[in-house]
Length: 329
Ligand code: RI2
Image 1 (cartoon, rainbow, N blue to C red):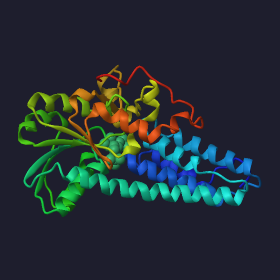
Image 2 (cartoon, helix red, strand yellow; image 1 turned 135 degrees about the vertical axis):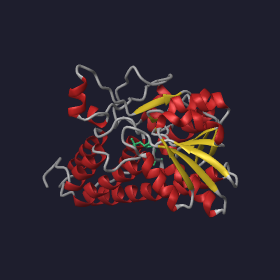
Image 3 (tube, rainbow, N blue to C red; image 1 turned 180 degrees about the vertical axis):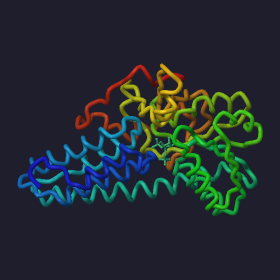
Image 4 (cartoon, protein in one colour; image 1 turned 90 degrees about the vertical axis):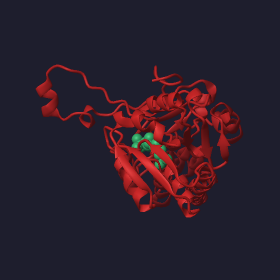
């Protein structure tokens, strides 16, 4: 492997994230940290500068895969900030240790978050879920370990139907599951005690960026008086939004919405496939993190505490902003 060469595992992990073989904000962060660990471990760079250049090139490759889940740049930043030393061997050791520390902290954060979120769930509660979030599942898992009965209305979450993954996992946890199509959600909102969703990013104003359909669900939940709770580890907080940057919303291939023969049979149409939307803070009752529960408007104080230094870190140039973000979509 020569200078600036990417390790095969970095290429494979990046491809898996881009293809959504590895998906979910927490899993993406974990895989990205592992990729930097492997790059550091296998590097045959001969100088500290070459080693650092290789790791930064690996981080850039990983960063290009998916634009919305901020856990990805946060994970990369965490590891690269620990890439210190005067020799290749010291750099290697510190980078590998930083990546391992990150992955351990991620595991612990999710378990801690699960305990915080489980406090909101009472015996006999019914939740409604959207998409597949391991942070949400951690809350339910802890509640079940505490002996609480929980049932769930699970939205299938077109176009990729990740609700089916949620249904499968909830059944494993002993939860009574009812699967519904997305458009049936409003009909069932009177029958649920909480809407419980994950997040791919949380902006400084408390806006929640999550799988497309979350914002409409939240508006309907508010209309029906059903609390909407977001389970999101602090790795989902987006430090760039503290300085006014907007979160880029990923758009994915139209083949996820309709296959080519069906599309051609219809005639001349456009197809759009935004993967995420933005739920304004006024529709969110609480954000559950491993550091406790927060009203969305107060999340900025936690962001300042956690990311004060990171914002000044120039390694990741500001991500491009779009016309999306910061308001209802
Ligand atoms: P955890 C997913 O995005 C969903 O939007 C989910 O709510 C979010 O990541 C958080 O997942 P995608 O990768 O980190 O399926 O809670 O597009 O597992």
